[in-house]
Length: 436
Ligand code: DSN
Image (cartoon, rainbow, N blue to C red; front, top):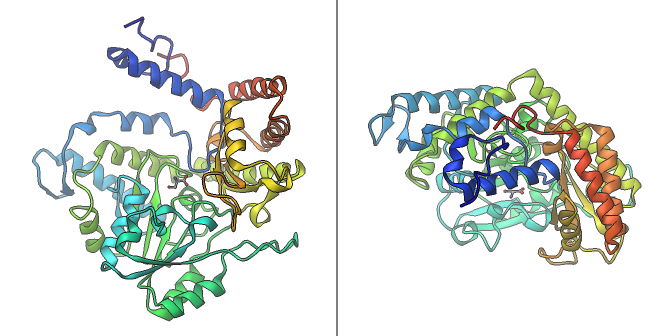
């Protein structure tokens, strides 16, 4: 067992009790802070969120809900969970919040379990056009229990003013009318344009379906007022707390008073056992942070940075799916830059030299989901670290250089050196570094 590795690290000395884990946590801290984090679903939480997540609340069993638990000793835990629920409903203007889902996937499963019978039909976005695994992928348990039919985006037009690749509401309506779903799911994991809930609501009403809005990606943008709020339009809104909302890893559900009991029973005891109250406390912290003027300025900067990154990538020769972005993410079509470059290769090269992102299918991708012709990039994390539009231009040029010279080690090492110094100038945890 060597020297305690947390010396000089930003983490509590308590982790010295396990030097192997301490080393790994410290190494991951180093990776996150010395390389560019451009995965659209990631962010850097605040130190307060980290502290709540690492608190003694992890010790408590609290199956049930505030005021109705299966274990004693939950007086304070009840206050924690009530606080999180109150902050969530106030933040989004919802009648009811369930803050227990361990993840976005669990939140979606709980809604299906609450509102559907096995075999019922659900209309959701095609996975290869941006839908999530829980929107009926054959690989997901959702497709074993419910019958999914899908809609996608319109074809690209080649016209800069009306580029296409936006949700095809004619198709949503046609499929809804022919398949008569019990539930329509709005929301996506790789859609760079604003998603309005109203057109989905109208179609849902026409066919007598419920509407669920999966806001996992834009939740923070909604909280900060730069994306329309689906609460009050959709019957249920699910979201994750760790993406643009910048909280701990987890999920949550917002709904009406009418559906509250059904949703709560579907989460517990329907799907989960004991809630993670340390994570729920951290969710409460994040909800309070997201209600501040500073958070509003943050999400405005996230969107401005995404637009700046899109413009600079276009200048490098990349095509942007849907012509650009309204939110925190961009879907990059690599084929105009280099028809032989796959998403898989691009991800691997960029990762090796300090630029972290993920390959992604583009609509109607001729390549498989493991290979892909696209990359998905997001600006939520590096905006938290303090980067602005000038840095986004630099990031685009580093991506262009790395991929153009992907067989030239000297050029790639030069890119990596610039990434390292850029990241050093924007530490996501300036108050933690060196305090260990
Ligand atoms: N895995 C998430 C994402 O990256 O978008 C969705 O759950």
